[in-house]
Amino acid sequence: MPFTIHIESGKIREYANAVGATDNRYRSEDSPVPPTFLVTARNLWASPADLSYFRELGFDFARLLHGEEEYVFFGRPPRAGDSLEVTTYIADRWEREGRRGGIMRFAAVVSEFRDGNGDLVAEQRSTLIEAES
Amino acid sequence: MSSGGAAAPVAEGDHGAPRTWGPITRTDIVRYAGASGDFNPIHHDEVYAQQVGFPMVFSIGMYQASLLATYATDWLGADAIRRYSVRFREKVWPGDVLTCSGVVTKVVESGRGFTVEVDLACTRQTGDVAITGAATFEIEID
Image (cartoon, rainbow over all chains, first blue to last red; front, side):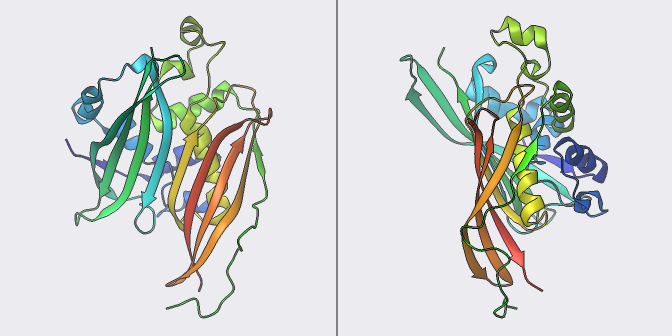
């Protein structure tokens, strides 16, 4: 299910402080988000129902690894004051034999961020891995 | 508006000045857990981490990915970034000292300035590469 996030300057500052981003640009009223900030959408804004993609994957949380992560901005990064609608889906799934002969399962999970006009402004692409048991 | 023959701000092969972070503390990891909303206990609960077979808690991958992103935006601009990608290779542990570095791989004149691509790395004090990354910037020239 799509959900909406509101990008707040206080949350940007908290995040920027946590990642050593002391650039004054991140302390301005119209601060852009740090490049990885949109990770907070799934972590903090999504309700359990919004995360149905993860149940759909059926990955064992105890064996979950993060393989790759990518952020794409179709123009300047979103900034404080923006509200964006987030839609998350599984873009791809594949499997590979692990070193111990078990199955490693992979999934590419994509979140799309759209502004009030419905225009795509950013994408988050995550490669999740379920390690072999 | 074109760049009108203005010089590019960087050239292919240019290296950013390396930047060092750390030693990484448990407090650093917990601060990022709170900021990002990642409360997987393996990153902050020592008892849990040891029960599931690790010697201690270890850092959140997105934490070092975000330090590397900070390195890149401090170098080439917070507003100019258009793409940032990382691959997680090695875990990062409390006490690690991380060095971020980058090299310009491509500079192309674009509508209002230059498109700049860089390769990035975050390396542990052991020499192991914790993260490799890449980023694209659109740098406007006034």
